[in-house]
Image (cartoon, rainbow over all chains, first blue to last red; front, side, top):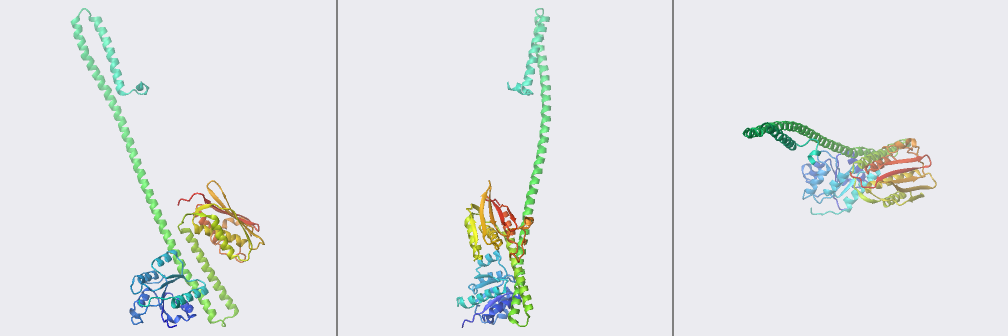
Length: 146
Length: 345
């Protein structure tokens, strides 16, 4: 496993962050996760600005994106990512609490790559996150030159 | 003649007739009188009397004409003012009608916008419920799970059991929230009308239920059903709910029999689902379709009690009715109707 790409987790709730990291840890994917607490911070990371000005400028393998967040929410961030020439091929997966039809339609229209509802049952949640981590972090291929 | 048939002889005829009668009488009588007095003794006086008589006659008739015309004009004026009054009244009424109409239109607009606002509020509410209420439940479950994984030995068996109970309750609450949201969605979601083959829809539902009840022997008796107008997703939900209820409540019977058929009246189809299961006491029939209402204990028959509430909502949104008949331990029959013609919404 030479592919050292990161996973960007955009999530405002610290408990959700911890539980998601726990689930990824099962597959030793947790150490590759960067956490941003809202859309603004995530955008700073993606554009290598602010406290991320000196990071390795490679794009992450996937952005796991919550919808409801303070300042800039997930849908807004998705819209910006899709309209930014440097970011528009970035895989984005919505990882959210609920299956609201209008959200689903809106996100797919804006070009989201997947939409996952966090199950209430923790075992199901672990499974979903694990599969996401493996698929987007290891199996899926993305363009390199972007 | 037509004018005679009229109750009041028209004015022009009146004047002419009066003029004619008086004229003829005047000529005849005056000539008779003059001739008897003056003829043949004084011919020249007779001639001049004749011409004075003519002048006098013209004077009298013009006076008569003046009186008659004046009288008639007065009458005309009276009826005209009456007419004008009526027109004024009519215009007033018309104005009132118009303003009432406007008021009504305004009210309809107001109500519509109120409804739209409350619908939006409801949507915002259910949106926030589905997002914000599920998150803490997920956290409760997650941390209980972590606790059990990380510290399996530091909790006595009783403690583990408590944790399991907490976790089970959280999961159940999650299910309740999901079902409530589903319920509110079925009430708001727009109906998409298509001509539906009810037999196909029912068979799909039966297949699903059979899949969930592997190993059980259920005799399905599906009679020919008509085509109806309706929303396919929602009507399938109706069948799944009614049929899975029938399957659930016949679980303790050795031979489960579920019969599906349809009768019709002049303008509606009446579908029915009959089972030979646990049934219920008709005393509680009115509770059947309430949200989270149950007539059996959870331990006996699982479920949250929202299924029939959903079914009722869907049927009433299609313009139909639903009711049930049952006897304890002898089974139940659920009926629902759908209009034969597409409901205009």
